[in-house]
Image (cartoon, rainbow, N blue to C red; front, top):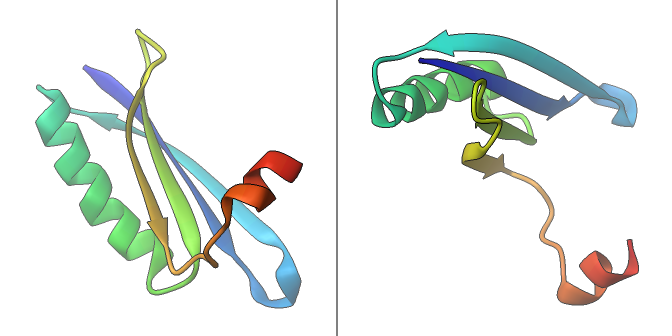
Length: 79
């Protein structure tokens, strides 16, 4: 099975890096574990978001939000 992992992480000066890579795994659980390990390395303590999707089905499998400012319901409705 193929999964796509995307990481968006903050850079100095307010810009954002977006990284994307494929993860080959025999199961969803195995892919999630691989994504967790890889996001630890890629984020390395920086604020960011990780997203794992199933390549064939296109569905969201896993997300991670790390050291990001909290949002309020009002902020989400306003955007």
